[in-house]
Image 1 (cartoon, rainbow, N blue to C red):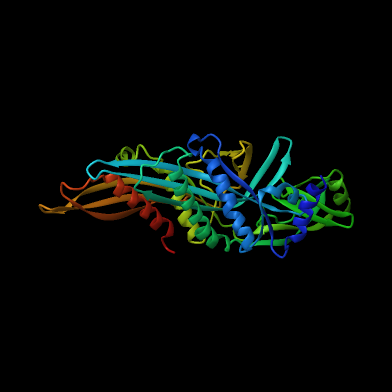
Image 2 (cartoon, one colour):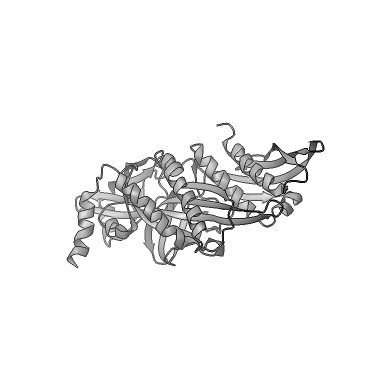
Length: 416
């Protein structure tokens, strides 16, 4: 019992608070989506990856793993939490009879969520302050099983996840500035509010620490006026009697004011809808676009399209996520400043040149892009493929899928 008490204290003492404190809380999936059943495969995988990062001390913040997360949260003021949200885990197995080849394509999508938690009468609410989308897919000429127990699939999955974290996450997270900022409150008629909380990049649901002569008090921003709800009884009355108080909060630079989010993906082309009828194309487009937009340096929230977010009365989106342990938790996020609607408006292909040995096929895709209330703009993307006559299995969907991925990247990074 003594060691259980001493361990977090020793851990707390060893942390260098020259860096912000971030607590890693594990892996989550969309609770209603049965296709994301491999969350138990991801949980130990990400724990191992982040354990190595913790040891290397190469992150721009001090990372605390979930083992000691709850104890550490109570020892440090205003900590941020970090979790992995599994947004896509698609496995497509294709057989090429003439070549005798079975190709497996795996599409993985994650969002690294940075959030703060607060307890309410209806349970714990987790407010997302920032997110880093990460997506990749890999092909393997092996007949892999869709079962999470398949060792070949586990190796393939770990390889993708490790590459995403070591390379893309490592690059993007260093751009994530976590600053400690000063705040001030004003109190009247028994209510306390944070002055100009939106201008300071703070969000509803975010915690703040107020400093008084009687000690420090933690509170949460609960509405659009910046009103505060205090954790300790009597804290509001004490600060209200003074009229004001100063304090501190964590701000994720650039993430609260200039956020982007894919809110919808429409497939308006009947041919495209029929061609991709067996694939989660709308969700993939949303994930790919978010990933490439984040790569260009923009702050991107998890897409609403393709995931089961709902909107509450305050305009915030919320969703119930399931942890690897089976616990259900509510996550909410503020509306993005830039809402993106994407469209898949057309596909076409045909032979442009041929002889007795080979044919050259041209492929085209049309995509639309609209931000907020702007008029949708349509873009055309083209590629070609050389096909050897009567000696190669030729599936147009394979070419269109690759072209779609490249086209979404060009659309997201246009103008960069």
